[in-house]
Image (cartoon, rainbow, N blue to C red; front, side):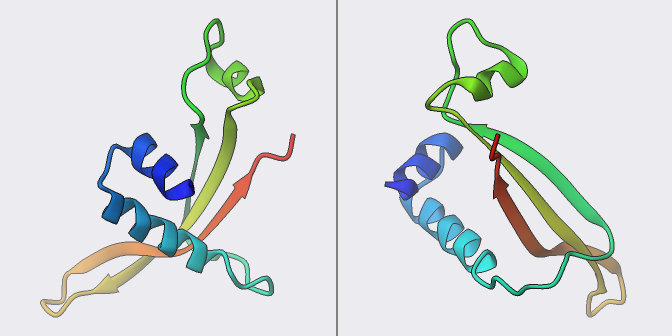
Amino acid sequence: MVVHKIQRQMGCSHKAAWFLLLRLRRAMVHEGRSSLAGRIEADEVIIGGPVHGKTGRGVTKAEHSTLIFGAVEVVAYRDHHGEQLERAGRLRLAVNAG
């Protein structure tokens, strides 16, 4: 089950993993969504654990490993004290197709 994989990979509680999974699924629902805009932060993660004899990108060639890319908008706003703050906005995830 995906929730158990997230829990194991992130080392978090079942409740936290479930919450994260729901948020990720909700962020990816709308097919006709608009492109991210403004300042974007991106990163990737390899899910599936270490592979004996492989390092770096070679790990993604293992059958049980998956490379996932993510990008999130950084949204600037002012809090009730007038301080300039940032928060995560819309999110996009993609699984490496190669």
